[in-house]
Length: 190
Image: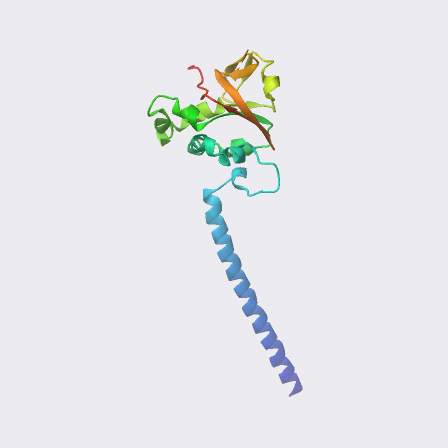
């Protein structure tokens, strides 16, 4: 009788253990399923949340109300992950007002899916490898951009101009530096 009682006790413990193990697997599967569906649409370093360090180039642009058009263009060209790589990277970030200077309909046309390649080329023309201060840029005649084209550099009355755009502010980033510019840089046609 004592052996039967011990056997029932062991079986009860085993059933409870198996029941709770199955419940944990079910919750784990649900959690994994949610995680997979989220990760399918938000892949890459650009979507990692980190609020404790200096923001990267992309986070600086996203956090600026004056750069919403640039952010929309980066997203349309699907270049978010490029702007969060380790770098260092020097980015020339046109303001919304700079985009407004373009002929009517230009921005809207570039944001269309069929213009993705042209848009990516323009955005890459706004970036160069390295962490180049405004003063350092002023020492060059031209810079090699991420789209494999050169952009001209000029110094006029102590101000640095890149591709005709004046650097009006500079913001250090964790992966380089962002230079705010007053015009959109348009690559020369090949």
